[in-house]
Image: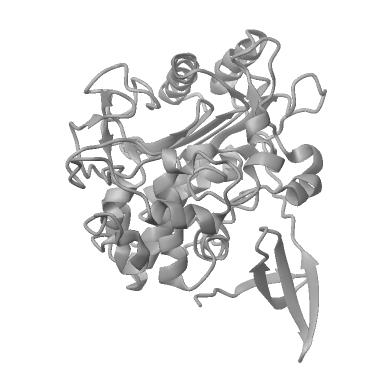
Length: 422
């Protein structure tokens, strides 16, 4: 079992803190205070991130405030960094509509698919360790997955959505993790599909499989591996692979609810509450966190896989593999448009069509990489500008409306960067 010891200092005393995760994702730590004597506690971490709103970003704040007035969302977080330095980090609105509880930079928000790159980086870490090859057939790690002609599907095919897996296998919302893996392993791929030659975005199915690959290749639970090798080294202290009901209670007012803002009046979306979505972890959709944490993540990728503290998370070569075009010019049969992809990342595709959803705005460079989250969020890095951005709305809109509001905000962000008044 792969494990990482986290060394922290408290009151000048150096202590080695050992961490563990229960099956329902509560995080515990125990500190050896004397030989054979341990102090045990449940950890609900909270970072202190003061708002940062320079004059150049006031128009961005005003735009988001107008969107709230227009009923697009109850609130939003935005964080922006240039060359690893945070230049804007603020929140507007409420955690829950009409609650009077202000959304802050420390509010923990549903990230949905915009956190898929965290899972992708975890896979890259395993490649660096020699535990995994992206060209491995999935069945190398999950032998039962080879059923019904799926033996040719490689890990990279699942990461770039060219596998031919089907999503409808997961239609029963009452399934647990073990059942999900069994169903996907016993599923039939799409007829006449050659892995790697066609593309169709899968929101959840493939990412359950990738999470299982991480568990079997590492010998650790998915949660403990991503905490040990991605989240904790980056000090993403407000990021959770899943928010179950117990964690939600502990977070209290810091938890930002996702709303269905397609209806009027908007209300908390029943499908995305901890009681529903938090039943078990989905490596592609149940992450929660802050815009601030996601900017730490993208700043690390822009810094060749190194944290601001000088710790190497992932090799420079692996960063390049994950974030460069692995296929281009392929029609995505889910979205119905041509989209370029890396491995776990969308690569800027506006050169194919202005109608490409979940983009990064017209000012983004062609090598911009990142990922959006279900009608509500995005995170990305623009290497040409050394720019890392994350924005999270807590109101879910239809794709066209979300695309418009997102592009409006991103255009204003790029303008703020370009005028140099930060």
